[in-house]
Amino acid sequence: TELVEAALERLPKGYRVIAGNAGVELMPLEAAKGAAIRRFMQLEPFTGRRPVFLGDDTSDENGFETVNAAGGISIRVKPQGETAARFAIEDVAGAIAWLEANFAEPAAQASSRNLVA
Image (tube, rainbow, N blue to C red; front, side, top):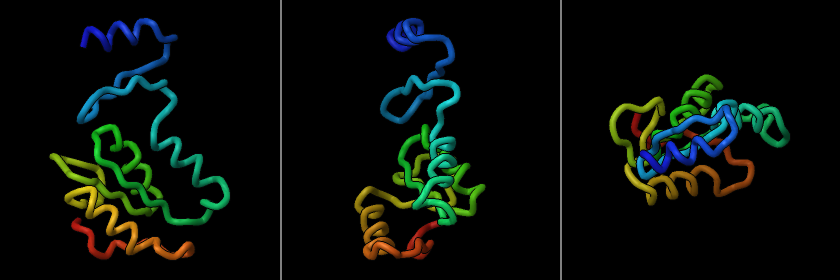
């Protein structure tokens, strides 16, 4: 934690520390995965589509919340404890299989089939 604090002191004001499963992120206060998702959803080709977000880290929770609010599909890969994600997949291989099953065709629509709530 001393190394993180030292790095944070060297950055301009306005950064925060986000603890993840395998490390930490130093991120500007205004930056968040949820904010990035909201921006993407305003751009072509994403406008009017259902957002899908998969994540495997505690730093992904903001993204899950944003996708849930937009009526999308949020999936926690390798869940450990509480999560805002609506669904869970046990491992990366399962996530890849779900993506392939749902997005093999360019115009495929995401489905919550084969997901554990």
